[in-house]
Image 1 (cartoon, rainbow, N blue to C red):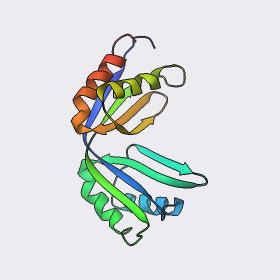
Image 2 (image 1 turned 30 degrees about the vertical axis):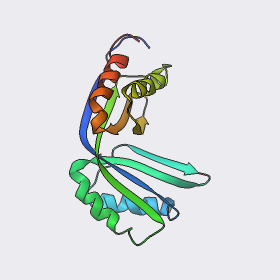
Image 3 (image 1 turned 45 degrees about the horizontal axis):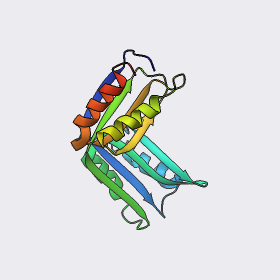
Image 4 (image 1 turned 60 degrees about the vertical axis):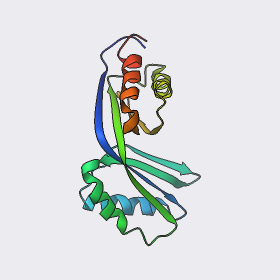
Length: 156
């Protein structure tokens, strides 16, 4: 990667939602997102991991201002004892804008090397052609941000 203009933005106070369990299938995913939509909750980062032909786990993030809305929306799923839903605060999202994933090698390695150097466990990574976002615990934000700035805002 060459030196270039890469913007780094931070969103504090992000909520992480994890959904998994034996009662988890695509119909449940559809019902869950319908309930969140009805509650007026916007989804940010999203990762749906399949195992075979059915989803195995779902992790997504929302703005912390929607915490109570998320709790109300997922309450209707409490009767499904085979389904596990966890809603946790205390996360921050770091977004890099100005990268070019399809045409540059090393961006993903630089991201995970920066996370490793910071000692931060990322619970969610989302990427498109020109942006890369990671969700980290807020307590690791400052050191993770410093490592990202070192890796992405200087010549690599």
